[in-house]
Length: 243
Image (tube, rainbow, N blue to C red; front, side, top):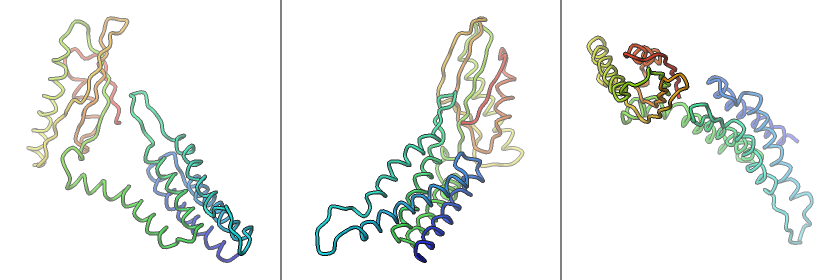
């Protein structure tokens, strides 16, 4: 009984750690969900392992698998993780990391239920490092593309105009903004705006809707992108969203 209490308590603790990380970042996976997943996974694993020893007959072979129920947890939690994966209006998939954290919480519960205590604590440490510390380090010392954010721009323009001029103007004004910023703050990295994809659609009122995906430095505010695009000639409206 003491070992059972220790296992359940540890699973609650590690589930709490995962939940706090997601809660701080305002992600769908919160404290309650992560703790319930981890504790329940631990409980099912304990039941699976203990049932093997309780119902197997000494001296006789058995087809019972001590981790059979635990194996079902992995596939079952997959459906729960799929529920937090969302597709936004701009065709961007979000929630993959949160879904992975749900799966990880169940894995931690299974490991604790099977008696792998030190392994569980080391695993949760690596999970938090991989989610919080490594991405930050890569942005600081890694390639330039890792220090950029993607933004979805929806621009409504007046009809019968050269749309190529709009694309050139966005990139050109981004370079102008970069030079001004570098002269003031003396930053080493350029603040160029790179256009990744373009979609064009005619509207019923005769205007054109241009759907852009652009890459900008992570330190550049989305309001800067908005005003850069808004001030371009013949642009009627702008909708900017960080992906």
